[in-house]
Each structure stands twice: as C-alpha cells, then as structure tokens.
Amino acid sequence: MSYHTKDLLTMLISLFVLGGCTNPSGIGLDVDPEDELVGVLTDTLTLQAVTVPDGSARSSSFAQTTFGWLDDPAIGKTVADLALAIGRPTTVPRIRPDADIDSAILVLPYGTEYFGDTLRPNFTLQVLQLDEAYTDGEYATKEWAVKEEVIGTKTIGRFAYKQTDSVSIIRHIDDKDTLVKDIPQLRIALSPEFFKELLSEEVDSALLSTEAGFNNHVKGLYLRVAESEMTGVGGLVAFQGIADMTGIELTYRQPNGKEGEDAGIDTVRTLLPTTVQNNSGTFRRLTSSIRRTYTAEVQAQLDNPEEHYDVLYLQAPAGLRARLQIPYIDALKGRNIAVNKAELVLYTSSPEVDGFDMHAPRLTLYREDIAGQRQPVPDGDSRTSGGGYGGDGRSLWYRYGNWRAFGGYMKEGESRYIFHLTSYIQDLLQGKINRSEFFIAPAAVSDSSIPYFPVLNTGGRAIINNGDGTELKMKLNIYYTQSAD
Image (cartoon, rainbow, N blue to C red; front, top):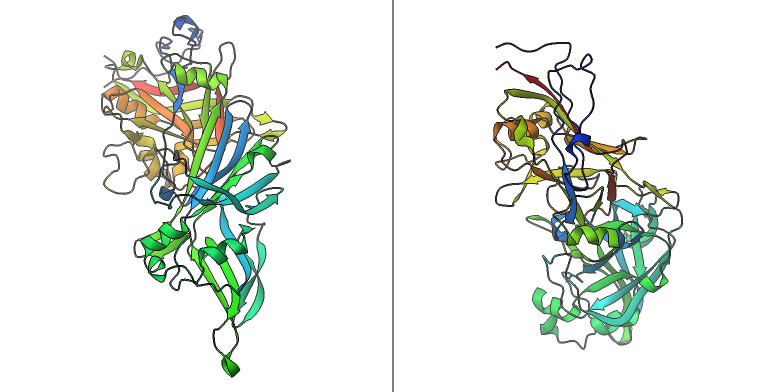
C-alpha cells in the first residue's frame, strides 16, 4: 500500500450552514496549488442545520432538577415551577387544637447549576398546596392543579447555591438546641395554620395509616416564582433531593393529654420527607413543571424545520436542540480514507446580555439511529455496560479515561465549543453508521456522563453563529490519509 506524502497528509473540509444550499462555490476554502498538502480540497459538502424541540423528560431521572424564571431576550421566557410530595414519616404527627407550632420549614438543598443574571436578580417565591395528589414519574410538561391560597412566601436577592453559601441553622442534638453549619439550601417558612388543619387529630386515623391514603390527603406542595413581580432577565437554579433533608421540618408543642403531676408539654420534631432512601437507592419526589414562550426568530425555525438557518438556538431544561446534517458525505465514501482526526467547531453569538455571560459552559452531541432512537456517537459513548458501542468508536473514551476528551466545553476566552468526532466520521465513511445527521444541546457541567436524552439538571442555553460573510461559522475539520487507488 502506498500513500501520497508531503509533510502531514491532511485535508481540511469546512462545512458551513447555508440559508439554502444554493451556493456551493462559497462553501470551501480557496487553496493555492503550491500550498496544498493533499491532492484535492473537497468544497462541495455543506452542513445543514435547524433548531428543533428537544422533547420532555422526568425529573426523577436526575439528581437535581431546574427551578426559576428566565426571560431570555434572544430565545424567550422559561418558567420552571416545582411540584413536590409531602412525605409520610414513620410516626404521623397528630396535632391538637391547643398546640403551638414553632416552625414549619420547607427545605430544598441547592444543586450545582445556575444560569441567568448574577448581578441584579430578585425573586419572590410562593408555596401553595397541590389540588391533586402528587404522582411520581410525571413529565416536566405536566401542568399541575394548584389551590389558590399561598401558604408560604419568601423574597430573595439571589439563589445562594454556591458551596461558600453554607447556612447556619439550629439542630436539636443530644436534647439541646445547637447552631450548626449545613450545605447551601433554600428554607421557606410555611403557614402553621395550614399544618394544624392538615394534620389535625380530628382527621380520620385510617386515612393517614397508609402511604396512599396519606398522599391523597396531603396532596403535595407547589413552589413557583411570582411572575408579576419579576423584572429583568431572572435566572434558573437547580434543587436536589437528599434523604433526611429535602422535605418539611415541622416542630410543635402541645399538652401531653395527661392530668395532675403527669401533665406536661410535649415537643415534637419531625421531617415530612420529600426524598427518602430505600433498598434501590434515593427516591426523589420532586419534579419540574416547565412552560415556555419563544421569540419570533425561534418560533420561525420550529415552524419550518426543513429550512436551513444562520443562527441556532439551544436551550435547557428539555427545551431546544439543533439538528445538523451532512447531506453530501457520500462524496467521500469509497476512497480508502482513514480519518486521523475530526473536529466540529461551534462559535457562539451574542455571548453577553446586560454585562453577564449568557452561554452554557457545556454542550452535548449525539445521533439518532434509523428507527429515530437516540444514541451516543461512538466518540461520546460513556455507557459502561452492554449498551456501549461495540466498534472502535470509544477509543477517545478509553484513551483519556474521562468524558472531557469528547469535548463540548466552552473554550475559555474564545467563545467556542469543540467536539472530537473522529470515530463517528470514520464510521459514516465505512457505512457502520447510516444516518449522517446529529444533534447538539446543552448539558450540565456536573453530569459525569455524556447525555443523549433531554436533560432537566441544567438551565443553560447557547446561540450558535453561522451567518454568511463571517469567519465565525461552524465547521468540521477532517484530517485524513488516503491510500492510492
């Protein structure tokens, strides 16, 4: 076998998104024959792209889920409320009419993600009771029935989610109250009267004796941002379910029901758990409920998915993704090409809004098979068991030992993302993969895997620039060697 050689045997293919595939002569790069490293620079390929919906997801699939209010001037408004269970403790509280409730606190530990305004945020939060029993496994598109009465409210200047935002709280330890530091968490005081009625000793004991009966009675809670009081951009944060923490801390005092010298006051402290630990792991019973309104520019792409666009809009949680196609990849097949390296480079557009960054720090990339089922590309297959790709496509994963080798992270100071797609392009050329289209969407930095389904654990977004007449156009760089015919 012989090879054409002159230093590095390289071909650079620049693939651009066009407004319509009518000007292929403007796709490639003009190369001086004396400077050309290989025989021919292919300039007849194009990358076609459009913004499409990402699909819905269940919060129970993630360790953290998104909450908040974000009015993105480029993409539109996202409202992410939170529905959560009022869990049944081992001993169900029965509150007497003459009891004094010292505190009822909704506790929601923060996750690791925040996206939005970090300079001037201001949120008024409201807690209400669900008007239907909380059910597990609902999609984030579900609209929950909610009662009108607000049973808890809190105004905060920002979501204190960073590790440095630890809180000092009173814990009852060894029969005394002790001030301790705990992880960052949102704490909202709830109405004592609400719980006095909800768990009154007059409620039928049989109704509260089972999980189903208790759940049908208490129904659950609903956390939302008061939209009428929001100004500016706002932001999206994540909350996580932690056993023995996420839920409602309830403390009350009531007579012990005895007379004479035995009469006294009992202090009852209990947690109504939203999240519990069972034999199969952590069972989280909180879910995002998401509503969106898109700008005219975004809606135009959603209404016309067969067109090709100069700007792409990516949005989480479970909002928007971009579909990219390589319609003329067949032109490179049958030429005995060995792909040494393939890189997809994406440039961002409008990175700042009112002085703060508005781009997701991480994106993901995946494909669909011929049945339309989502699959990781070979280079980005982070599955560890039988579902993993069987060919040579996981070489980057094994070679570097972590998912960062696949790429997708914002390159610091350069406003771009780079993906490594060497095995994917090689498999396309060899016919191991038959669909030459793939998808990009935001992903959580905290996710240790490479997701290929809609995510709810981040609120990031990105706008990818690909306008004609600019150098900041998406491109796929392919370096290859070709054997002689």
